[in-house]
Figure 1 (cartoon, rainbow, N blue to C red):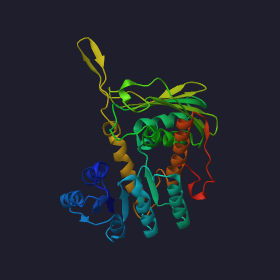
Figure 2 (cartoon, rainbow, N blue to C red):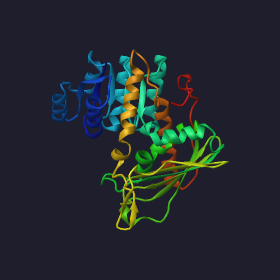
Figure 3 (cartoon, helix red, strand yellow):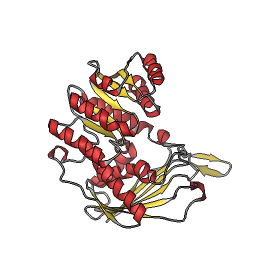
Figure 4 (cartoon, helix red, strand yellow):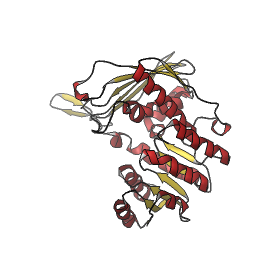
Length: 336
């Protein structure tokens, strides 16, 4: 049994606690903490977990084998570094940290230990449809890939959402996904600004993000974050001999009143529910018996931050911005 301490008991933290206590196997939640002590006490009391005053106390708890960080983004670095220093595996929800410099400090700290301890929460890699798409690509079913068309559409976004978050909070999932899908780093980014939607208020919405992969594959990502009709994630790879695309939005088709309709997911929780389950279950299984995490690594979190910064600069300037990464440590020679 893997005993996990959870830092951050807000929406995503509580959802992970729910799956670890009611859905998954081989895992128990033994400690929690949150900046809101009342919420932490309520959550901990309901599941019989120890409630700690700080994330560092969760990491130090001898009853905690591994740590799950779900706190506010700017706190991620301190808690991930604390787990590394304690020699405990740590799963960190994205972002790994809020700056590329902080991400690099985590990479350097982990590299100094000589082994992997960190996994970052990019759940697209665990989604059945994306895995099927990658399997078709890797099998050569469509020949060598040339382009990929993506769409990331939200019905709406919260009032605190700012225009750069279309890159740093939304497109970052595609940024990680295409690195994994093609097994290549991203070499450059551009952002095109279409006619503005009246639904976007003060945002520049939609946007078209163009990513150049190191091997020449071009990826375009439509970002529409106030499109009203639902949460719609799309992806199609164009190869030399054919195409492969994510399937239908829903396994359900409704025929009624002379119409055929397919329900659209309301939000990310509905669309990627199973992916989150698989992500945490595979993390638990990988750590069984003292193993190491196998999913998205600290390097993946760092690379996503560097590409995001380049894309934000491209949004600000309207220019093509090259992505510059240092030499990848041998610990991360294979993309996660």
